[in-house]
Each structure stands twice: as structure tokens, then as C-alpha cells.
Image 1 (cartoon, rainbow, N blue to C red):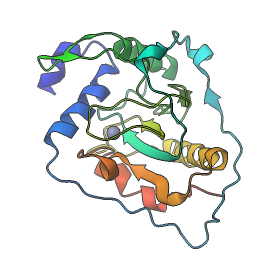
Image 2 (image 1 turned 135 degrees about the vertical axis):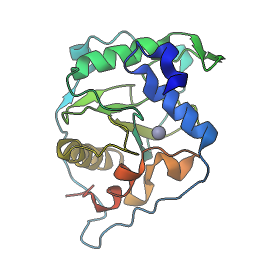
Image 3 (image 1 turned 120 degrees about the vertical axis):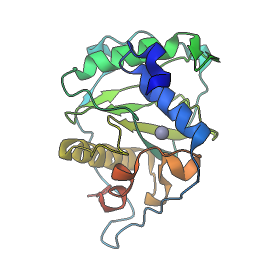
Length: 218
Ligand SMILES: [Zn+2]
């Protein structure tokens, strides 16, 4: 994307740009109904999947006074909005995203607000590894117009308007959501795609069409 060239050296800066652009220009709000299968139990009981903790990817401290506290009650699913980087390690992607997120600057000629941390709580990389992002006790950040309070933000690496999510990414998403449903008693009706709650093309049609078929409870 030509308009993103200024920030292109930051590998993971573009996803946040892309969310912003999608929010600004998306033509329509298309709700996604995640209809639970009758076979899915009301309460899920899933163990925690492997998650790369912040200490393992050398996270810098969160800047807490830039964030609001929350009590998670629902889940919002995103794509990064730019092509996946299969050969870059998850740890490096998380470091770059945090560095970009916490720094003030400008995007598309407008001031960019410095965030307290990575905008998402979990990052599912191309390989299917899950990285720990922002602490769940803090609400996420967005450039689109919706209230992020009490929502768990999960981003899947890729540009799913054209790319397709990897099987390992979908498996990781299933396990992660199932565990989060167990932990926070989130009903299936509160698992949303970003475009369910804001005007955006996120998480891309190729992920969106798969979401209703994923098994978020086992
Ligand atoms: Zn999104």
C-alpha cells in the first residue's frame, strides 16, 4: 500500500495502519452471526494453550496510564491486514509491534497517538504460535469507532481479503478462544468479528467466512 510506505520499515506497523484505513473507508457494516452449533455446549472447558509470554519475547513494560482497565466479557477477532511474514519470528513481530504502538508519531499525515502497549491481547502468528500481548486487565485500542471496554482482542497474522489463514492459525484460534470462554464465561454470542462491532473490512472475508465453522468449544 503506497500510503503506508512511510512506516514500512516497521514490519508490524502496517496492521495498525490498516485497521485505521479500513475503519475510515469501509463501505458497509456487514454483521457476522456466529451461530453456535447445537452440539456446542453452553459452557466450555478448555485448558490454556501454549502462549509465548511477554517475558519470552522481551516485552517492554506496559505504560499503564495510557490504558483503561476492564473486565473481559466478549471477544473480538481481527486480522493484521497486511501480508503475513512467514520467515519472521513471532518474538520479533511482537517486539516491533510494541515499539511502534508505544511511540507517538504520524500516520497518513495525522498525529498518531502513543499507546500504552500492543493494541491486542493475543497475536496468532503465521506458524500458529500464540503471543501474549496487552494484559487482559486493560482494554484494547483501535482506530475504528467502537468501545473496546471489556473485550478481548485477538489478531491473526495475515491479509485475509486475499490471503487465506493457515490451518495451524485456525487451530490456535480455536484453542485460544475455547480457553478464554472457559476462563471468562464468554458465551458464543459474544464472539465477534471486528466488523460486527465497527465499520471495517477486518478480519477479511477469507477468515470471516471460516469463523462460523470453527469449534470454539470442545
Ligand atoms: Zn480489526
